[in-house]
Amino acid sequence: MPRQSRPVIPEVPLHITQRGNNRLQCFFEEADFLVYLNLLRAASIEAGCQVHAYVLMSNHVHLLVSPSDEHGPAMLMKSLGERYVQYVNRRYARTGTLWEGRYHSCLVQCERYLMVCHRYIELNPVRARLVSEPAGYPWSSYQHNAHGRENRTVTAHALYSRMGSDPASRQIAYRALFDEVLAGDILERVRRATHGNHALGTPEFTDQLGQQLGRDVMPKVIGRPRKQQR
Image 1: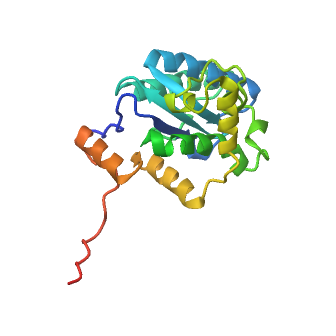
Image 2: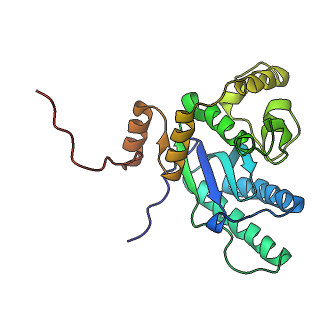
């Protein structure tokens, strides 16, 4: 039986994550991060995927992208994965796979969860206790989104653009989002949706996507349905 494709709808953002094989290291020195970012920029243009946020951790990556068509994310991750593995294998005289199987992703409801995913991604180094604040980690999109540092890989989503009338006001509003801690249940919702390749949003949003795609975008309930009380 063929594998079911990841649910994708053009212009609906996707939170994508990919881990190193057996959770082992994927980035070994500064040059590796730079190469990956250059490959990400080129591959995202080729695949028609706008990158809104990212973080590169030592053994996994997170991306927040908006695809222009349903084939873009798969094309992006295939091209990016293959090119980076070739680079790593040449540079470190190794063979074999680097990534742990296929990437995981979830469709993201813009109004409710886009900025949640921005924060989830760019706060990853803080949760991992690598830095005390997101600005201290060099391999994420935070410095661009929050402080305007030049980053040709990142394209602002329309929701981000509406946060202020000019770049300075948008950056102030964006930084203010990080004053609030992401609650544990929100973190778990993002993790479950992404790992399960489901949708992240309200019931109305997930129902609409399910009808549009003609397939389930939420996990099936396991077990017998509960008897209704009379």
